[in-house]
Length: 162
Image (cartoon, rainbow, N blue to C red; front, side, top):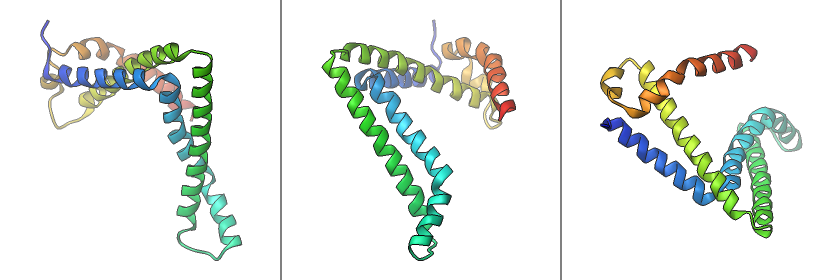
């Protein structure tokens, strides 16, 4: 079985994500992503309200929106990180580190495959370089391209509900 050049890149990404997630563990990996996603989401949703409150409490400033965004992001980020730390301590106390790292390994595999899937999808859609030339003989493309219709159905349903 021959590997295409793009397969080498995808394999390196897959190895990296798998090792990183298995070394960090499932809890740390999931909550690290959650802290950023929840922090940004909360900051986007509530920074306008907090900026108005800041302007009422202090004098109006062009920086109040930025300060409110950063304050909310940092608050949510720190709360999730504290929860992560408490959960990791609990896992250590009840001796579930091996399970945490094993689940992290599987999460890393899924992350790596998703990165390859999205990269192949972008390669298929972009107009600059022939996708056939890049993906010809790719083992990853052979297994992931048949999943594109399922992804479009999944994304289509999600977009329709928004």
